[in-house]
Length: 437
Ligand code: PMP
Image (cartoon, rainbow, N blue to C red; front, side, top):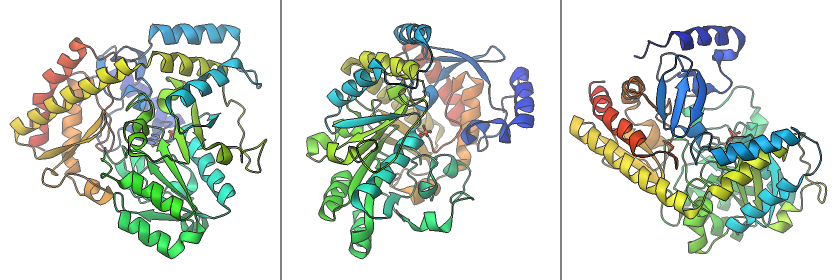
């Protein structure tokens, strides 16, 4: 287990005396892999540097936003210029519409957009808007999908809840939980049955465009299209959560890779992560008639002191402007190379596994080669215990992986051959550690 980072050890001791678990977001605490979380002081391209001066090839990429790599010079220039003009005005700014126009041009399902500050706010607002628009109460979500920490969507929510093996969260009222129907992922029959029983009272189905918070799960062929059809038949809305996949899996997100060609369109979409290029920005968008139900035009209230923050808008505009189709081709290719190398290292060490993939997102699941992972029950049934030794071996070799088996691995346009070779070199020992677990 990694122990030679005395400065991180000290910082963690101090943080634990000041913050619950020493962190501001639970998975950062290394709870499921053990050891001391590394405190990061800088990041550049594909690398992170910790407080002890150790450099890591980063496969977390800030959990998605760093599509271009860390501290891309053009993004930093745009941010510096925005900072020089002032940090926040509490009034409209030109870059809000610039970012909105870029999103709309890329994702034709977006007719109107509202900027918020976090993915949680985006999904929370989408849910409220769906209820306000339809006049119905129930929301359907899928077990293992994470949509942020809003009360009603924390049941069987994946992400940190999966990592910590929590069924849901204390502090969520029974009333809030009762308005959420949790169904197994990839099971259209269960969706049909829920609509047969409650169709007149279901406001929306919310789903990750491709799940990446129970590890990565590929939507079955026709699953998302089926959700679109069923919601439409029953007068409910489909909310496609692209907080993680949007502008990361492709130029127009996961919907751009799949749904657009299949000929279905979500009613609402949520975005986060890449859209802010590392600054706190997220958004919801979709059908104009639905979006115009938001205040000030409509009766559904939503607001934010820092919404559309000018520094964050500058980072988003610069990032999306640089995120060309070539960037996605590069990240796609890197993702295939890395997942192939990972799989072959695990095969050589005799570790049963499956590579879980959706576009350029992938994760590994241990002990699942026969059937793979198609839903939350499959994800939870895997050999979770193999991940901690694998993770720590990689960390010791200077590769920073997500500290949970239930998270995707993130690459960037900055992962050059030197960075990739460092990862490839680290894999055999980590695979051996996983085999010996
Ligand atoms: N939806 C999805 C699919 C996510 O992956 C996340 C965060 N990982 C969220 C919503 C919530 O975003 P945030 O952490 O910015 O609140």
